[in-house]
Length: 92
Image (cartoon, rainbow, N blue to C red; front, side, top):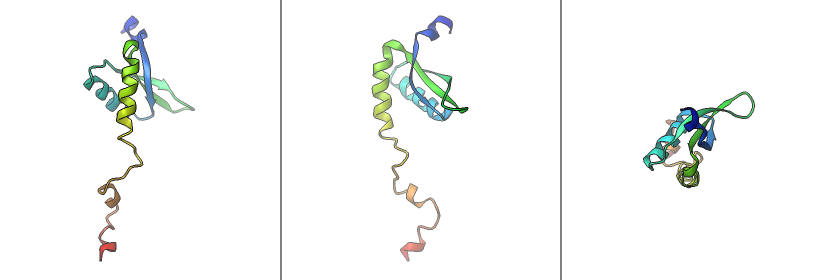
């Protein structure tokens, strides 16, 4: 990618490659070219940078922020609350 890669800027960095891939796919679904690059995170843990061409940066930020607000890992739905197999013990 050579000089083309230099025109790419980081939208976000995440610790999990799968999450980076999902963000890349989400941006591509919105017709924003995106790529993933290994990025040195805090400490010894590498992270993954999701990169887009600079002219798409503002639009990409809006998409990532709006989509991530719906995917809060601390929000549980009814299925998530019943993962331990003990849900029937308290219904008796």
